Length: 115
Ligand SMILES: [Zn+2]
Image 1: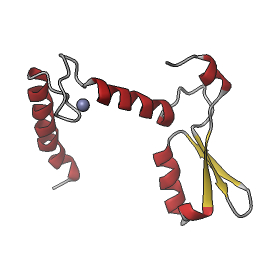
Image 2: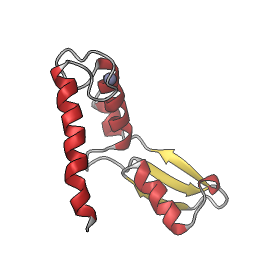
Image 3: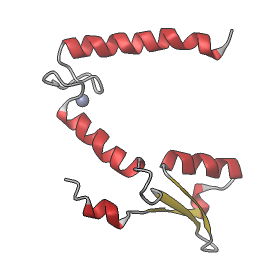
């Protein structure tokens, strides 16, 4: 019994739900709002977009977040994603209360004119 064996069933279930919602023109994300044939409703796709803008980055961009020790001001590291930073900190045994998380926005990002 490996973890691998459990995955297909789980995948099938979520895929079936996805296809069912899609067929009924219901948002595959929240399952409530009409999607008008798209996979997600307007609210959800907007939310996903806004989140991805913060969390994900194109490789050329500066790291999405920098963690600074709030006591010493030392830079502890930079990560592309918040999740990675939080994971790394928990590995190091650093409490989130002892650090500052800075979101970096590169000039390129601003110039691209996202709207
Ligand atoms: Zn939705």
